[in-house]
Length: 485
Image 1 (tube, rainbow, N blue to C red):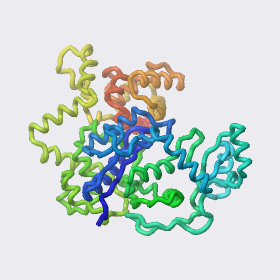
Image 2 (image 1 turned 180 degrees about the horizontal axis):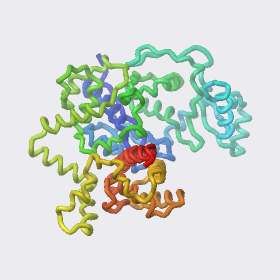
Image 3 (image 1 turned 90 degrees about the vertical axis):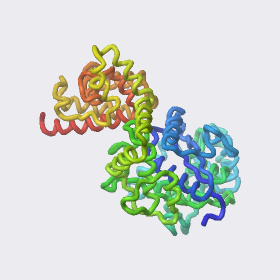
Image 4 (image 1 turned 120 degrees about the vertical axis):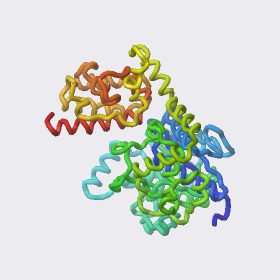
């Protein structure tokens, strides 16, 4: 039993399209809070200033709202422990960093990026795991002052015990022991004054009175650093629970390079949020076959955090399709089905914008499905024949698609203008004219060489759908190259 009402949080980083793994972790925290009468908090962890954007933050909020989850406190609604965006809390971390320095639990490090990279290369060459070698650990106060006055850039690192192990009990993995000599002297404050994830995470969880930290198992190895910070500050640590990662059927890590992972992708393809939450919720409960169709209230009722599996949660798309089909057929009335369909088609102005771009390209309305139907299709049915009429060879076509794929991954903004600029950059990089680069992309997006304007179509489809269609196109064209077609 939980002695006090828990406070749990989801703390995504707005550095890209919201991952379905975020929904998975968020759902666990939400179910845990609701099961025990606690509160579910949303916090934006944007300490990575070079990659975090407000556009991605809005996408995170929109995606989590779409799932049907609601939070008691967050950057959009405020709360008693705000602000709930780490960049807005920047000045709050400095006194704590100074406290660690004053107590001798941390030290300033003046090592340059070049020196650190040489250090890591040497360690890797020697077959050792790369970690900080402690060069600045024993600088005197006078040496530190001199370097600071000389304007040398420094970071603040935490000190780590030199012997023994960190022993703790995880809510999923049970008793865990990690030797201190395997733990790195983590950077706590970066050269730009921003805290790293580890520093901000611990301070924010303490100040926001978080009682249970449930997150992915990839953070299990970081627990010693976090526990050490709690000890250094003299704070009570929360209960840690590390959930198994979602994996593909072959047990590989669920990755956008292999499969669609963006929440927006599943929304765009017409999955119901209730079905996706139902599917993810089944990872957290023991359920007999045939009883899998569950509402959120039923998931809360059956949720049991003491009976979780350490085995990887397999993201079985066929099971999700099956559940989604059952939700459509069994849970929606005919009126609700019509309403949901219209709502889905209008999502992100997809249908409206598609119709606007179709008007000048048709002579009768009956041509609309063939011209613009790809905007609503889950699969445009690409085959080698789809690309057979292109002037570029299969090898050239594949090079274009792969280059566009890679460059699109680096884009921060996603709109007609940025897509236009990026594709012109691709053309320059490949030494081709833009009119040579675009035809394979028309086919990849729509399955046809006759379609709506390419840049507008990609903007309407959205980043996650474009990514997947390029991935499918690359696979089809790669088969043509292999067959010598």
